Length: 369
Image (cartoon, rainbow, N blue to C red; front, side, top):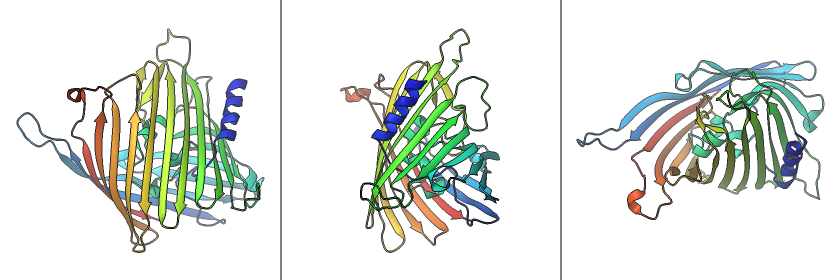
């Protein structure tokens, strides 16, 4: 355990950045109770090709990607609370997403939260759902950063106005470290094992931030005859440039699973996922660029690549997303995305490539309250 903790803090010193989001939204005021939430009605058109008789297999549907409502507020003299529920049937709602209490006596330097909250890992996961630049998170985030939410205790803070190495930018250093069940959303842990997960972000200047994340945990193998616990390790690094009207973000996540891994189960609504036995080395990366025009519209392009098993030749997925965001006002946003999916094989024979018809066109309207 000492080696794990030592490795964790060594990592935190080596990599640093981020945006904080224990919950989806922030309180509207410091006094009383604030009702918060957002809804995201959506339309999806799935391009699934044709069957053997040349009949179209394309599907389309209207749905609620997310429909959330919650409350947040303060309690004299040093406590605050946050609760968020998901009502979208698409996400399996209604369900409790977040519910935690935070002690703030130490101010910006150190806040202690206890309850159920979002894991402090990675750039995209740390971005609230209603502030994502694309409609959905990257495939690698859904797979490697899951479970998104867990129950435990978290320590978080920032450097505030403190000048470090002559730099005067606010919140040059931000950090979060959590000790959690490792079982996921609304699931009680029945074993002795826990996960440690953390993130640090360094923002030396207003236009750039660099972040690093780490997670390690154990869990009992599904085969009761196997005494050795399964292991899960994740690490990630990310960078953000926000200069004038251009925003560029890049993120990389690497994962090692020994004994078994969970496929799926990510997403803002959670989900148990599928347990697959074996040892796996996985990794993925994404790069996003957008331009902020003076007409409230943001054209964007995003490229992402996810390899769930480096030993397999036929399961790598690359996705190119084109689209735009249009802001009617500060509460209402329209997002349009086209996802061009390309399956990739390391085989040199083109006949062995495994590309299938699975592109998606998505339109989402969002209102925040």
